Image (cartoon, rainbow, N blue to C red):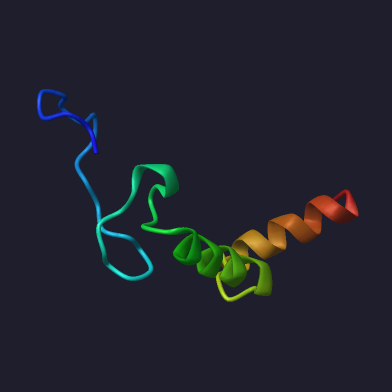
Length: 66
């Protein structure tokens, strides 16, 4: 825990997985467990960045060379 006379650069935020206060060594998570749960979701495809139909068409056109 930082000394009382040190002002943190950013406000404390809750862990995005469980809501407990985040820990500096695992920021923005509170523990290695919450960090691993989040990583697992990314690796299994549970999280996805949405793509619009227009963006898909642009990518297909670029791949074909049109």
